[in-house]
Image 1 (spheres, helix red, strand yellow):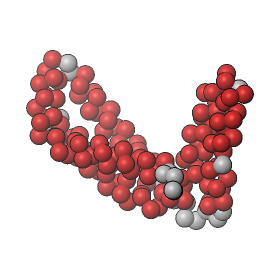
Image 2: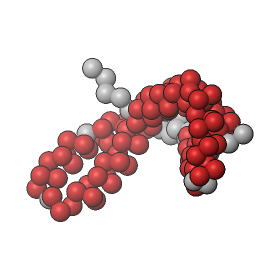
Image 3: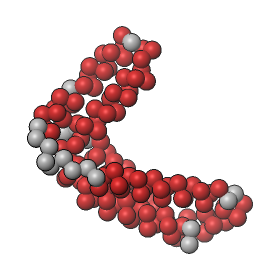
Image 4: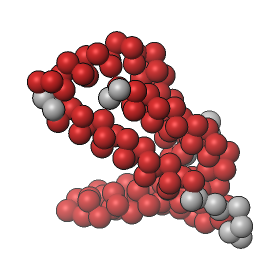
Length: 138
């Protein structure tokens, strides 16, 4: 069984969020507007989500690993790191935060070779989510 990369997981999460939002925007929009009249900060929530989608799109759009020689070998190297980190956590429980940070970076690097496979899909999902989020404030 092939393990999902960070970018595959991101695609799945974005797809789930986009499908839910798109299917329910007509119901959510009037409710958001009613809630905003009582709690104006709900508009900040929408704005922050829109800002996050913009940053995520920029970060994904800027990923171009096609010209990096050896990126597959590096990804294989970083793919071996999680087992090492699991063992280290058992011996160094006070270092869990630092070990998790290493694991997060390793996950990103491990998934780099696959980013080109899902990049266009990620951008399309983010654009669709941004459109639906924007319509909630209309």
